[in-house]
Amino acid sequence: MKSLQATGNKLADTEVQLAILETATDGTYQPIPFQEQLIQHSLYPLKPTHISTLQINVGKMCNQVCKHCHVDAGPDRKEIMTVETMESCLSVLDNNPSITTVDLTGGAPEMNPNFRWFVEEIKKRNRHIIVRCNLTIIVANKKYNDLPQFYKEHQVEVVSSLPFYSKERTNKQRGDGVFEDSITALRMLNEVGYGVEGTGLTLNLVYNPAGAFLPPDQKALENDFKKALFNDFGIVFNQLFAITNMPISRYLDYLLQTGNYEKYMERLTNAFNATAASNVMCRSLISVGWDGYLFDCSSFSVVKIGHFS
Ligand code: SF4
Image (cartoon, rainbow, N blue to C red):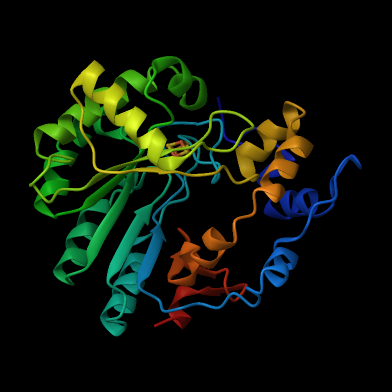
């Protein structure tokens, strides 16, 4: 499987995605714009609270090509954050002590050749680091096998996607062999203390639906994951986050290809949750793209990071 970009799919273009999301409907339902929902719930305008987290996407390269991927990542994507842009991010940290957390994402962030240097530099600045680790990268190549130890040494919080605690549902979404490799990687993380009570090493898992449906209750799902992973594989972890798939990029392509787009959008619109909306992460987080562009969706703006510091 290849990325949308590599196959020349028109959905690789964000503008095309936006046009579909703003207009497409078969007449069976009328989408309510997010802004209108906010007005109806007296939440408009939804303003930033304070900026405590800098989320940095260090590149689109990934060892996987998941069907639902929201960033169209994969081995064929070569976009990678440069050292110069990383240095700009570090100077943002130097100039903004209120930013206490750095959230590293990708692609597989570990595939950026300067990833470890970047983590070390951020740690020197005494920030809490979260890495979105897809798990399989740890076993993808010998050079990544010591990542659990590296994470431990730098007290990195690991957040990892695991679509389900069974092989079939995980491999269906993320590719053949992903479940088995994820289990091996989780064991390696547990071995150095991740997810183990009393170690202070946090290992959180992320569930997202494998089809055109919304996630079930987070707490109940966490209990099911904890029971199944421990009973079947002796694996422990801290918390499970159940997230909803955004109808964008490869997931949007999946919805359109399977004829589920209208039904999913209706479900999504009807499930609007005012409490969740008032706590969206972008109220306290600013996101930097691999090319240094800064995305602040709460003010609907995009600027080059140099202007931020
Ligand atoms: S592991 Fe993450 S970044 Fe990589 S293809 Fe899957 S969803 Fe996308």
